[in-house]
Every structure is written in C-alpha cells, then in structure tokens.
Image (cartoon, rainbow, N blue to C red):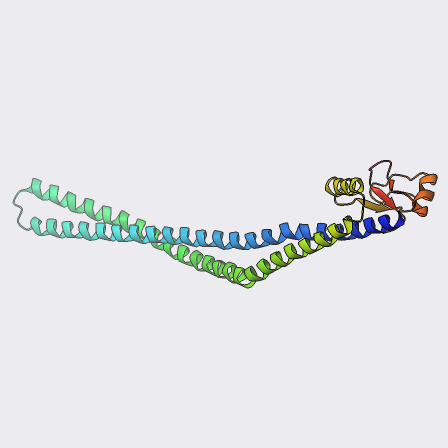
Length: 234
C-alpha cells in the first residue's frame, strides 16, 4: 500500500505541474491574440482617420470649385453691367453679384474651418501611425516566440500526462478512477497532506485516529470533508 501511496504522490506532483502549464495554454494564446488585436485596432484607427482626411480634402476641393464658379459668374455679371441700359436691370444684376460675393465669403469661412480640421487630422494621423508601427513591431517581436512557447507547453503537457499514465498502470482501476475524479473536481488537488492535523486541501480537522492511520500508511485515507486522499507529506 505504501508503494501505491508513493505513486499517488508522484502523480499528484505531475498533475500540479500539468495544472500550471494548462494555465499557460490559455494565457499564452491570449497574449498573442491581444497583440494581434492591438495591431488590428491600430490599423482600423489609421484607416478611419485616412478616410476622414480624404473626405475633408475632397470637401475643400469642392468648395474651392464653388468659389471659382461663383467668381466666374460674378466676373461675367460685372461685364454685363457695362452694357445694361436700365436702372432696374442694373440693380438686379448688382444684387446677384453681391449675393455671389456673400456666398463666397461664407464658403471661404467653411474652407478655413476645413483647413484647420485638416491640420488636426494630419497631426492625429501621425500619432496613430506611430501607435500602429509600435503595435506591428511588438507583434513581430513576439509572435514567433509565443507560438513556439505554446507548442512547447503543449508538448510538455503530453509528456507529463504520458509519464503519469504509466505510473497509474500500477494502481487499482477503482483508485485511478477516484483519483481522476478528484483531479477534475477538486482544483487538480487529489492528494493532499496532513497540515498540522488538518487537511491541506480544505482545512478540515483530522481526527486523532485518522492522523495515526495516515502516518502508518497502510491504507488509502480520504478526507472526511472534501474526499481528497490524505498522506503524511507531499
């Protein structure tokens, strides 16, 4: 029986390491995905700002065309003023010229606003491109490293499981089944030790006779509270 208990202790040590590596199998891909997501977000941010800048510059060109068109019309009307014979026609045409000049003044104000916004957009885009490059550099520097670590951790887990399973062949089937259930349901702690007359797994006080039985090691002792396998030490 002491041999079986020693096997259980060794299996627990392996499963403790497996548990830690299982955490890495989640954390490492999360780190990699986080780097990829950061670059994706940076790409999308840069693209959105570029589109906004393009729209701004298109609006500027359209307003510049409007101003040019209005100036052309105004010049045409001013030339017509020289040939008009009636005061009524003169007033009407002069009113249209004033309207075009007022309209151009309003468009010019809008154009100035667009130009200011363009300068701010370019400045913002420059900062966003720096962040994009940083995210890209971080991914390039860590992607292969993390992928390699993920592969190595998975290989290590398979090796540890294989070693544990070889050990398990020397135990009764029912004991293996119970051990496996405890690993699954008790936070990967199937085998625990007597910690100052208390279960190190759940803290339950161990009865004096049970303490003696644990020390003798002639049978598999289970915690009366959590059901874990109790041994003298790990």
